[in-house]
Image (cartoon, rainbow over all chains, first blue to last red; front, top):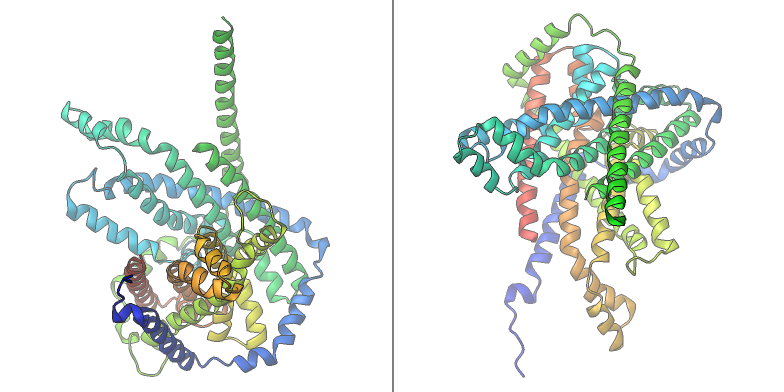
Length: 261
Length: 268
């Protein structure tokens, strides 16, 4: 019987072990660069546990004060997602290669959108707090830009997968480009767009819970106060509230997205 | 006759449902827009926006490299190292969690996998910066707290993705090893792990991309990386410094995304 031959690389798992060695070298280099002291973690672990123990006894009396900021958090996420979506629809149409056939334009706008997408939520929040001042405005603006970056990419990738027949049919019969967008593109993508918007809303709800830490409105403000006053029993109540809200929103949104399909 | 009546009533119900759904959406939006207590935008907003944009156009190039370990290149490398070590730690912790949360049989309720899933969902939802602050209490401010925060937080996502890839593997090889006399460990090492390792590596790379973004903001609470000098530059209104740091973050994240995307393609 003849067995299939293995190459030398396969026989000695060169790729696997090579990858492993590179990984180990990088790990040791990073470790030396950061001067990580794992001894300190073991030594001070009782402090971490003490903190955890305090959080195990939530201060239920503070619960009513959590409700209003929590609602504000959802409102921020709702408006931020909506504004981000409204900006994202025209942006995605410009970036889609089957709508705008000029490669220079699509390439250029994509570079800009990619740059926006690299900026994390809290970084944007810090910037907007400096610009518009402390309060939910900064949070809404942060979430608008944050969701704009995310939704634009999802949208233009979605537009590029549609059937090009109706687009060409409208153009060849003398229809305008605006007619093409209204009657050939949007009807094909609307249900997937709604699904993406719901998905982005989920992510925004998660993001909006911490934005207040830097002063951008919502429950994060309370989180910051309780942490800076070492009231970990109140921190625990806030985290529990965040947990319940995020899981509830995720559940609702998942249900809605399944119904859409 | 019956058919048409049923059809009509279904149509009425369908239309009422659409109206109710539309009404619900309108109510939610009215609540959302009028519910927020919008404070005044500060009057300097226009001037500050201009200053930020000018700062990005005229970045503080001297900050890029100064050789004292506190320049942009050093803190950016520190950020990458935090994300890297954090991802490795979380990938290692995620493997047992993934085996805990993976369903053995499809559409089959099991207490074990459901409990695993709930634990992972809780870890995922626990805010990263709160974890970072907790670890700062334990190990002091600096990169180590950031590494630990990322290492724990990422388990929530990686554990879930790992568990899903375990559920899709072919159990044939593992069963055949056991049926010819191998034990469970042999099955794991020679049949299960070789099937899931490429997926695990690919997901870990993907998580690394996300962790790099997270590591850039962890410094804002004191957990090392570029976030600390960035927040300081914003608070002292040194917009040229803010500009160069933003450019540094954008370039680094773009390169990492590109490299990681290429590597993930190689993994297939």
